[in-house]
Amino acid sequence: MRKDIMSDATARADYIDGVKALKATPADDPRYSRYDWYVLWHAATMMTMTPPGNSAGRNAAHSGPAFLPWHRYYLKRFEAEIAQALGKPDFALPYWNWVADGALGETDQGNAPIWGLDAMGGSGSPVASGPFAYDPTDPDTWVVRIELRPSGLFLVERGLNRMIQQAGIRRLPNTGSVARTLLRGDYDAAPWDRSSLPSFRNELEGWRGEGMHNRVHGFVGGDMGFGHSPNDPIFFLHHCNVDRIWAFWQQRNGAATYLPLDSAPADLMRHRVSDPLYTLPGDPGASGAVISDMFADPSASYDSLSDLADLAVVV
Image (cartoon, rainbow, N blue to C red):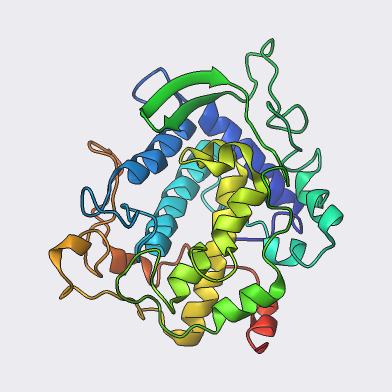
């Protein structure tokens, strides 16, 4: 069961140890690690437009209906690999409850416990404090190796960039914006992209409404503002909370309340209910999972949804 990272010291320590273990484990390509492989996978989805050449920004995992099930699959795979690396089969990814942090004052949001030395550390270019600080003299330091630029993917060697509240977004989503998103009854709607309105998926992703998921990326800044955002370990904690919000919405609206159906046009490939979830070519762990496999996946189990239930009655 996934727990709040700031409420469970064991979950916090296991997560930090786990991501560092994957960072120290070589991938099939020795130029990067198993952790970096997940960065590469995420970046590749950004480059896989659906359909190719579409002008709406929809890709294999973003700006369309597959946003939530694809990221649930991604988290599930990452979680299992950390469990194996730690030798703890019951390991579950923790989540960062940015809903609670968004209720704090503006200054307190940038200094919340999640940014402490015993958690994710603070800002910097590169980050210089906490478990993911960069020290080029330390062979075990946190090194970023994958970058997605407008011209393509690049191998690099540098520290993690994180610029909390410094990219023009100084506040996390507030409780009112979360409550309004939870009130959306339709999972998604035509034209199944950033312009879909009204739509639970589109508002939670942050293209409509008040930012939500996208706002959190902008609040953290640095590497979190790009397609290689999983370089920052806060990414997985953030997306666990996004998934937690979806899990609660499913509890209220039905686990299989997903659109579009298989009858939708072929140009919605990768976003229809039975379409395969995108993974890298030659992925040895590919399971052949399709979107509907994620609707009631047991990995999406959380210690508490009570804070979201309280918000769901707010109009």
